[in-house]
Length: 151
Image (cartoon, rainbow, N blue to C red; front, side, top):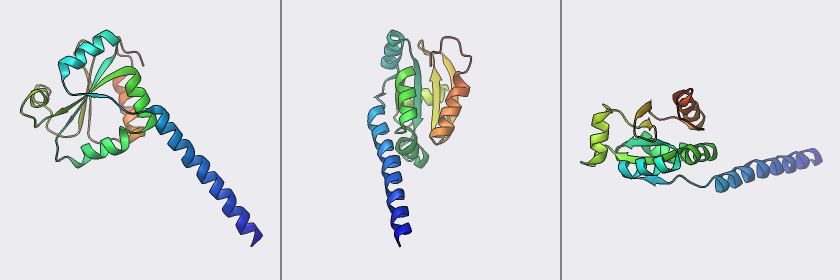
């Protein structure tokens, strides 16, 4: 009985440390700031010397929502994107800039993320939902050895 109480106590402390650290890390990382107009994002990226990360979505896309709820709140993802990118969300069904952007880059599947340099020049694309670890790997593969990219 005494051993099981010690084990339970040890596990409870371990869980508190693990989950407490996660909560602190999430709070410290903050959240992503999304732009909704590409021209504004290009202006901001040019002055901040950052690249542009464009998340192209549609309202009915379940994996787009999952990306928002799981990947875009991960502390490492938030820190990386905030440091190196101006983030833009474009709805491909909006009848305006989002639709035009999706057409320009032949985007037919969602979610789709497009990387642009600070001048708006295409640098890479990531298609489909990615959990945080896979997302970070895909981002690194798209930015590796790219001229002008500063992680």
